[in-house]
Image (cartoon, rainbow, N blue to C red; front, top):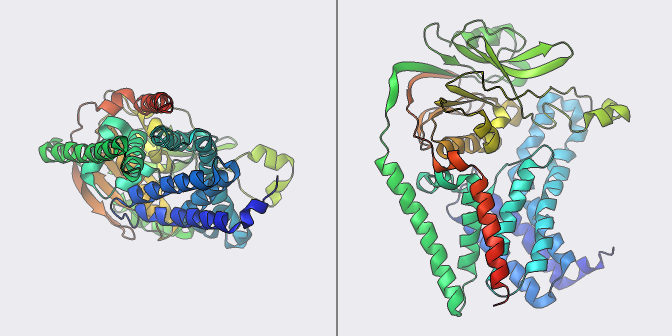
Length: 475
């Protein structure tokens, strides 16, 4: 395989443009959240594909390359904060920082590269390309979210976090469904030309966005915030650096914020290897079971073990192979063990430990008919003061809208909050503060459409879009 094509001036311009669009795409997400910016960037990327097709035809190498560069530019500017975890763990391991900073964005960029390869096969100048482009974008977001360890971070739907009204469509379609609609509307608007079909498609796309907004605006306007009862819960937020988090002094400061009377929520692994001593305390700790260690939570004598572990933070992917070939001397980490689903933990509380809150399907698996409160506990000390803690908070917040359940979040060096079932923040303790708040629990909304059908809705639309794309490809 030769890469001499990369040195063509015209092709180099396309490659640099793709990289720039990926970098700019990150401005659509926390902490920037520029309204509608994701639609503009996706639309320009769509037009970039059109230009390549007009000049070079079906050039698979070029399309694959611009996909990788777009993804690389996006991830290197939006998840750079992951590198901070290495320095928090052990600054002597700084030599590993190129992996999360450079290699990981390149690997994630491959998903966009493969998406572009398939786009090349389907690309033409009729409207079919709009349906294929939309379906493939979300299909590869779903693959990225599930393949191997899964990494559903900064999916395109999260670019709507600036608007509580647009977020309400999550209750219908979920994060992938909203993403699919976003990509389709962006491509539809940017496909505008003098042909009647394209004019209609542009108007249709704008109309969809208006309808989604009006649906959300009306849902927010008509929401009445009832509470379960007059009983309150306590939400504790801590602000300990990782190296001081489990000291006796820090521990005493933390438990002094707890209540003996009302249910109190403490952050992830807040108790370390200590026991959670009170039944009304919902506390994170490290559970030792023989040679295995679990990231766990205990409440009312019930234990839930974290099922979805953070790669390179709580476990090393393929660590058994790494140990066999001796690379464990270079990467000296021990891995936690993954827990099993445990719906007997509580009839009312739905535990989501840290990273688990960004996985919508895992959340759905943990929900029972009697569930009334999502509980996300996290330790964001690993990620510093950058965009990571804010992005994490936003991703978890989306779960409350999808499932119509209130959410309580207790964080160490992150954002702690109580969120109602339509995603509005009722109580918040900002990043960097150590405090607690007492609050009443909002009543959940009856099962949302998404609660009933989950991501089957997105799968249906993907198949439908492929069918429409195929049927219109002959026009």
